[in-house]
Amino acid sequence: MGDINGWANIHHDILKEIAEHLYSYDDFIQLGLVCKQWNLKLPEISSEILWLLIPEESSSTHIYEDEEIYHLMQLPIADEVPLDIQSLDEAKIHYLKLPEMQTKLIRGSFGGWLIVLDIYKGSMYMLNAFTKVRLDLPPISTFPDIIDYNPNRHGFEYAIWDLGVEDMDDYHRVSSSVMNRIWVGKVIINSCPINDNEDFMAVAIHGFRCTLAFYKPNDKRWLNLNEKTWFDDVIFFGEKIYAVEDSGQLYEFDTNTKSGPVGGIHEAKPPFRAAVGSYQLKYLVGRANGSLLMLVRHFTYHRGFSRTYKFDIYELKKNAKEWCRLRSLENYVVMIGFNSSVQMLPASIQTKGNKIYFTDNLQDWKAWDDVEHQDIGIFDLDDGSCQTLLSDVKFVCPPVWCHSKFVSTTKGCQRS
Image (cartoon, one colour):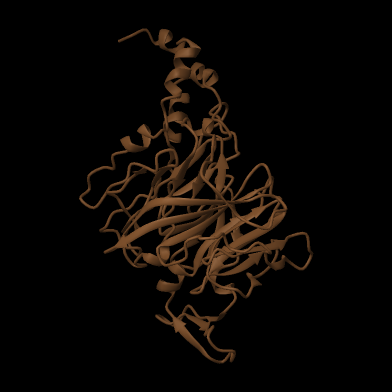
């Protein structure tokens, strides 16, 4: 055996070099717990690191099984062979584990906070992936267009207003096993709650026709934001809400009102020649210079498999009225999926710029009651290539990016 004191006194630069090759959050924490000296020498985890949260799942797992099915790494696949994480390490993508997330879905991510849905109960809450602080949100049963919820009416728990008619008495019933999985498409928040300060706003894309609803703390239910339908994405940017329809039409809402967001169609028309059709999805991203980006994701779909093969990018400069085609992100990278879309400098993920990191939020194309292969990868705008990640693994809940501004360190603390 070696000299224990010698290992404890390992040079700071050597320990730092070891830490720089760890991409698992738990591995970094465990490294600091080896001994007090290592704990003190380790650098803090950067507040600008973007983490990939990955659910533990296999094709044999059913949502009603009484077992933990939701972790964030070391995933078993259908044949019980452990997930090979080498592709994540090679791509220098950081990841972390989040245990005790049994039978949950994630439908949003911002600043370390996750928007979590309970498949059993239809409840919703915000969970900080690092501190484990939890804040409740109104349940799915409080969304607009849901007339009634009766948990005792098995198989027909929800009564939903038929959006095709004006008569509120015309509705149909849907089971909770369906509703709790598909009703909420994506949820975003405008700021991170700090020290129990719940001064934030949330916006959700929801329902069969992808409409918008919003929530403010102390409200008892989700409220209508706009009557328009078929929204692909929504973001908070510059004290406003921007949303994009599948047609490419931009919407703008002012958040500085007491009664709730006010606005409507933006004067900018959809980008010229922007793709419109079944096999594309649009995302919005705010830039530091005040401009907006619209990313058009093109994918194929065949027998349950979707595969992204290219992106088109358009920019709407501040105070402009027309979108312009953008060929390069230059030194930046963009992350899209169920997370609030974000643009970052590549130093935070140790890679070069001009790339799009994407996860799979194509839930409209997935079978709601089955595990699916996910469309996850990195698109390089320099050469048009697309690197796929975790393509052989099936998930019930898609992985999601988690961009944390929370500076975490092992010094003086331990994870529960």
